[in-house]
Length: 250
Image 1 (cartoon, rainbow, N blue to C red):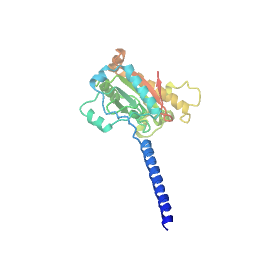
Image 2 (image 1 turned 90 degrees about the vertical axis):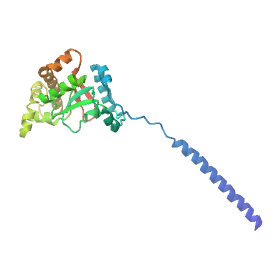
Image 3 (image 1 turned 90 degrees about the horizontal axis):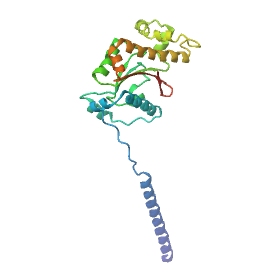
Image 4 (image 1 turned 60 degrees about the vertical axis):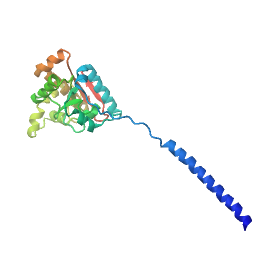
């Protein structure tokens, strides 16, 4: 029995040593595979008065174009919104004012990859201009220092379709009257002039943006003068719901 016990003990010991060695190698490999990767720190700063003042309208426009490219590519900037909320509480110095449609599929700050305190946003179904929005734009630019006015239409706009179809329903009837000039502007469109035709709806939507830009210049001497002096730019854009890309309109 003694002759049998010793070899058996050696076999068990060798097995345990091999097992321990394998576990140690695995443990070392595991440490390498799970080594922490340095993460990009979230942006927690907000625009200051000095930074806003130093910006030009062209720089702001390019910043929004670059932000939309990041959004469309799924590369949004990581932000600490809680910290931005705290830091912007005592004042705001946005770089631009955006007139957007009411549509829930168009989150304005996100589609331009902007943070808290970066944009003034006015929203109304059909992104048309009225006295309230003009006053808001004048405040944003003349009083608060924004450098850009951006009118943004979008694909498959229900308000534009309502204007094309001459919808009659409560206050919507009055509202879409402000969009109908864009339907008239699209009279030379070659194709079916119907809300069922996506190409025609886009034509009217883009003309609605152009009409709003013209209305801003005609009805706001303040903004027209600021644009003439190079203090601001008034631009238009069309947003695609399908791919998140922005097309800028002349």
